[in-house]
Image (cartoon, rainbow, N blue to C red):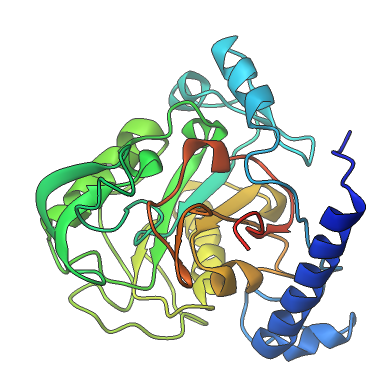
Amino acid sequence: HTRHTASSSSSLKRKALAMRVAGLVLILCPALASSASSCSGDACFATDPYIALDDAGEGSLHLLQRRAEGKSLAGESGSTYCTHEELVAGGKDCTPCLCSFDVDRTLTGRQGDLKACPNDEVLPVYDSAYERGNLTLSVVGQGFANTFCSGCYVAIVTAGDATGYQSKERAVLADMLGKNGKLVSTEWTGPSLHGDHRTNCSGVKVQSTLVVGCADTTKQYAVASIVDWLQTSHNVAIARKNVYHFDDREDNIAAFVGTGFNAIQVSCEPRDSAIGLCGGQESEISAKDGVNLCYSHR
């Protein structure tokens, strides 16, 4: 795979960030200090972890070009993913993949802030996250039909509760996912199904791909449970290398190191302290291998 040649300054920045992530990894999953050991929980096991620190969106033009040509999309791992049409038709000749999304500041932006985020969309729907206000969809929250995820099974794994049981926000998000990818159920599951009861999701078994209430740094366990549920309940086997989680928080992305899943930080510019501001952008939804953090805004 041809990769961008970074300047010495960029290389130093990448090394510094890699060291920072390494520190986070040891805090989140100390057993990774030994390659022969595994973390507690079913989603963190002994692999050879690595950090990929590429520019956000690198490779997206290649993916969009193949999408425009109606061809299946190849991830960095070499897998050939379905187009949306192939997936709907059964996807027999392409590799199944899973795209999992955080909600707050990933599928959404800061409520009503169209001055900072002119491409976001404000809806007459209540959103209880952070400052509260009208639900404001990010670019990705409005749809991702032009990305490789449109040919994948789709999921939500969030720490929040998406404004609670049977909320209009949950309905809006499920509808959007179903129109842009393969959503097998519109039912919600997880610790915050009936309200905000977020907890460590290690050992939590899901009954859907829409999961609410997984405390930050524990979303990788829910993603693993989703993969297991898809296989046992829908006979869909998805390899870990073909699973992607998108999230605005650095600590949530770093927690995926060593799991075999891919994780990409989004909402990289602009930022609102430790969280995103405008939410995910289409250029950030790319099939990158490994754990990928923002650094352009630092």
